[in-house]
Image (cartoon, rainbow, N blue to C red; front, side, top):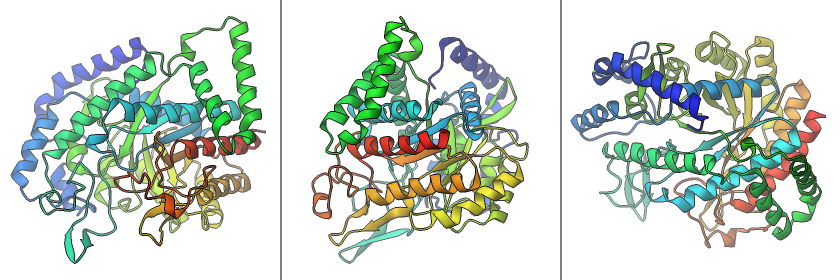
Length: 477
C-alpha cells in the first residue's frame, strides 16, 4: 500500500499485466492454484454467514472480481521481507486497530486518530529496541467477526448475532440482523477509502518523526503516570536534536511504510479479491497485505487454512492456550512448507494466567522444527470478561501481565519476542479498565463505543507502548 513511487509503479504494472492474462478466468471464479469456492464450501467452513439469497451472493462476487486490487502483490512481498526480519530478531512488529471496523467509522478523524496512536507507539518501541518497527494496521478489512453463538437474546427476543458490518447491522432488529451480501461491496468501498486516506497521511508529512515525538511529549506531560516515561522521552528528544544538528532532514523521517491486515473470515469476499500476479504467476488476496486466520477457524483440514495455504501473502494464525506442539508443527508444514522467512506469523492469545506455562513448549517446538516464524503477542482476547453492570471489558493490568508473560516465555526459551497485536483506538473511550486514568466499571458507561470487543484508548495504548519499551530494552541487552 505505502511504497516508494518506483516500487509502487512496478507493482501496479505487474498486476495490470496479470489481469490482462487472467481476467476471463478470474471472472469465472476460478483462480489457478486456489481452491474453488465450491471446494472450500465442501469443507464446511465455520463462522460463515447464512446468506438468504445465494443468487445475490454470486452477483456481488462477480462484481468484486472485476474491481481493482486494494493492495499490490509487490507490497505484500515487501511486508513478507520485513516480517522475515522480525523472525530473525532484527525487527519488531506493531499491529493494531479496531476490534471491528464499521462503515460509519470511515471518517477522516477516526482514521487519523488510529494512525496517530500507532505512529506514536512505534516511535517509542523503535527507539527502545534499536530495531525497525514494522507498522501494520487492523484496518481496511476488519469488518467481519466470528461469534461464540449464532444467536443473541435480549428481553426474550432472539435474533441472529451481529457478525460485523460485512454481514449485518448492529441494531437489534430483525431487519438489521438479516445477512446481506450487498454489504460486501460496502466493505470494498470502505476499505478503498481508508487505504486512500492512510496513504495520504503516511506520505504527506503527517508521519514526520519529529511531529510524532512531540505528540508523545504531550502524553508524558499530561498523563497521570507520565513521569515514569519522562527519561525515555527525553532520550528520544536528544537523539532527534542530534540528528537535526547533523543536518539530517531525510525524507525517511517524514514518511513511513504502513500495511493493512485483517482476519480473512468471509470466504466469498476473500476469494473474489484473489488475483494472479504476472511477475510470479502466484495468487495473492489483494484485500489486504497480511491476512490471518482466527482461533475458531484454524482447523488443519478446514476451509480457511486450505484457502490461506494457497496464497502468497504473508499470513498470521491466532494461537490459544489449547494449542499443542504437534498441531503447531503440522500447521507450519501446511502453511509454510518451503520455510520462507516472513511467510508465517503466530499471534498468541493465551490469557495472562496461562501464557507462562502454555507458550514455552510451543516456542521450543517451533525452534526445534527450524522454521523461521515470527511471534507476536495479542494480550487482549484471552483477558475478556463481563463486569457486574453488564459490559464486556478487559483490565489493563491483565493486558500488561500477558505481555510480560510473553517476554518471560521467550527469555526462558531463548527466542525473540517479535511483536504486539492490540485492539485499540485513538479516541478517549472508556472500554478497558485501569491504566493511568484508573478507569473503573462505573466509568464504562461514559464512552463505551465499540461494535464488538473493548479496545484500549489512546492513553492506555501509549502507556502500554512505554511499558513494552522497557522490556524490549532488556531483551536487546
